[in-house]
Image (cartoon, rainbow, N blue to C red):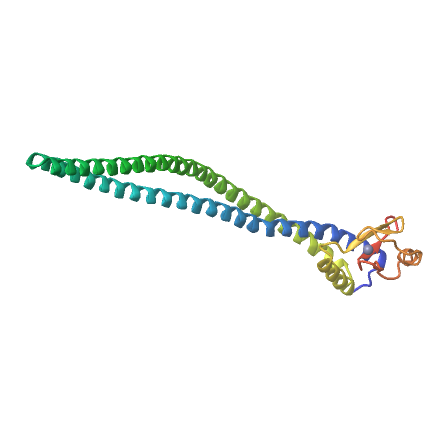
Length: 240
Ligand SMILES: [Zn+2]
């Protein structure tokens, strides 16, 4: 393998960094998609269990209503029975006592009727809530399906872009010294996809710390790859 000059290697590393920055950004976006989708799924499931809870509440009120209605029927039957006994009564005392009992039964009945009316009110408001939630949920489901298909097509596009960038990458990689490449890739991995940075006005454009004059001189000598003392990224000077 022919020796590649530092000047050439830096130029090639800059080219590679531009490609890797795109690959890095694409990967990041692609990884974010399932996370985002999972979040949306969870929100939807939470809404769905909210609706289920409301429907359960509705059922409880329906059961209560049925119980009370049954109770009312029994009470009404009892009153009727007492009223039918009125005709068979012989004494005033018995008559008064029976009337009192009937009155008591009627008072109980009216109490149960009030309770039933209260349950009707509850049922109305729960039903309204259930209907609203159902509408919301149907809308959310549509949105979710739309998001899913958008995410799918975005993923496909990004996968295609990735193939192109990887092809470009494999054209540049052979133009870089193996040792320099492994240094570069190590930094790339550790430094969030940014391994090669400019020095502008004695400042590293990776970490924005000052770079010593000696380091700048070393960069200009083009003897070896020079890295930032603060962030370890490979440094270069534009037009250098
Ligand atoms: Zn730095």
